[in-house]
Image (tube, rainbow, N blue to C red; front, side, top):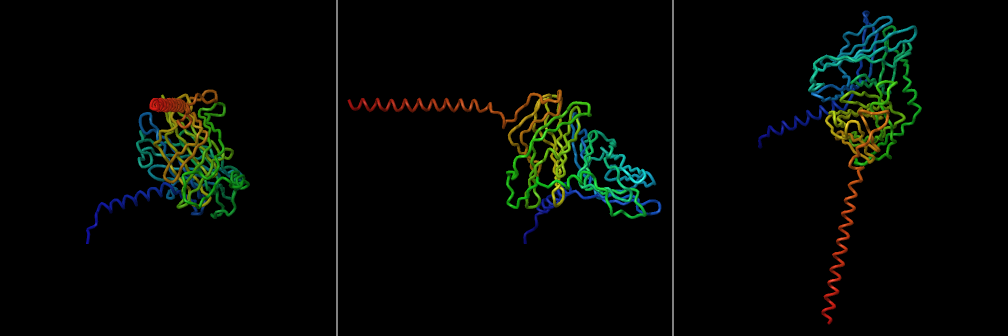
Length: 412
């Protein structure tokens, strides 16, 4: 009987570990919590999903972007319930927390602020962080006018952007000021859900055929997107492109287009990095650009797809060096480009043009064209081919002329 090779066991263990890690990255789960008051009766309830995207300093003039989710296992220590104010505080990981402040007026209640605190000293979430401090960002919510004794319900995504943090809320069920300790069965539905129910889902196509590398949908509509520091300022980031995403779920491959007129735009502009966040009912994607003072490039992509069935698909790539151009210029590629973010998710861009830094008067600067668009290389090829053809014709004519002359001399 042959002796088992211990190296094989190690390899199998490594593969299993990698599979588990990938599953944890790609599957998001709802966070459900209940908070009781001093009488041990239910006073706060939440069942929701939150994605976080945080950009931080990972070295000298180098920014890193991480994306993670609010985990299932959280603590509610620090949560409070009162007659007119309540706080839901969810703590998780090594010093991270997410808190929601509620207030009640007469027969309605609302969310005033959401405070997200994150510990940059947690190397498991923020590797190579140069800062060891805990930072907090506060954002105003759009959750208002929720009738008392109902819960707030919103399946659609709500994207909250402040500084270098982007929070995406979806599949939200929240109830504060619970009456008689029992969660209500009646909901106050968000306006985004009421709008989306009137729109037929026409963007997703499911294919049962073997996966192919070519998207099955028509080319997507080209969208125009821009970020401005405030409502009174001109754009600091501009982009136009059509976007198509192909992703795998098991043995099936699905393809979906980003629809510009159904997409919300968010992001931020900073000295050495800029973010463009695009959110629709089914897609959330963040592009992170960085510059070294001379040139910029796309550094990171974070993509979340919400399929009609099954778990969300999350993919990220944080060490990219594409779409490069001189700072103060734009990058352009009209031809279709293919970006393999992971083994299970691919992006296709069409008619792309982007300028993430030093936008002047809301207009694109001179473009650096991608090699696919650059037709100047065809000129020497055509000239070379023409010269080669001409030389070949001359040689053939010379050989034929010599042959005729030789035959004529033999006849004499």
